[in-house]
Amino acid sequence: MFIDYAEINVKAGDGGSGAVTFRREKYVPKGGPSGGNGGKGGDIIIEAHHNLATLLDFRYKKHYKAKNGEPGGSALKDGRSGDDVLIKVPVGTIVKDIESEKIFVDLDKEGKSYTIAKGGKGGKGNSNFATSTNQTPRIAEPGKPGEEKKIILELKLLADVGLVGFPNAGKSTLISKISAAKPKIADYPFTTLEPVLGIVKYKDFQSFTVADIPGIIEGAHEGKGLGLKFLQHIERTKILLFLIDITSNDYIRDYNMLLSELGSYSKELVKKKKLISLSKADLVEEKEIKKIRIQKIKNADSPLILFSAATGAGIKELIDYLWKALKSNEFSH
Image (tube, rainbow, N blue to C red; front, side, top):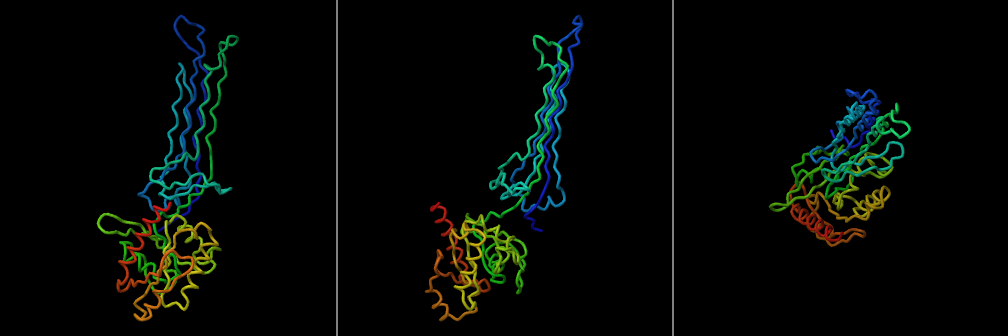
């Protein structure tokens, strides 16, 4: 099960209170103040890990609390600080405030971490309050409370190539042919109900990742169909590969409608490099294919790439084109 959204509560530890104690030594009937400081409360830290794929764990555990700092002791002994709590999340997780939806951090790299709630400071013991006029203070500070927050965890896939197309355009079939990913494939809309990430091996020692995501329908940017659940996952991709069924009555119109949905959701998406491919090329006669190849589509960064996942025709050329596009995209940024 792919879970890409969770809401959790985090509470850092409270600081320990400072102590009010006095030295008790032989032959020193009135020793000075010796109360130690309280320990700091534990922090709540969120860290990105590549071996996690979803936010499923947060469906079952929603509350995280760090330990409080211990109170100060006698003989100037400070209290022990509370242990931190480390929350591990998949790489690509965004952490937001639940009310304002302000983004605290984008954990887009392996090992990147963020202290989401800071532990309270320990209170000072009475040894800190001695003065020339008050050498036996009987006061100490209480510890400060730790921060408490309600947060959103939102996972956005990190992929090199995002597949964009209508339901049943052949995205799942393609990713099953070019990678080891095994998405559900059937001849009806919305077969893909959750994102699938595939690794495409290129030549001997190179590879890139492709995300197969639920198909777009008209109105997807308004949440229709699987709209928003889909669109958030292509925000991070480096290039977009549009898949259009070659048997469509008007694939230029289809491309423009897909582009319009992306632009309505995010203007940044439309700025990404866009490649256009026509799937199911085995369903069209060779003389028709020759006519199609010479056509150019406005607002695209490639000529039409034709392939058939069923027969394998054009798959190698498509992979070569994707690799070259990714490399040129790296050099252009």
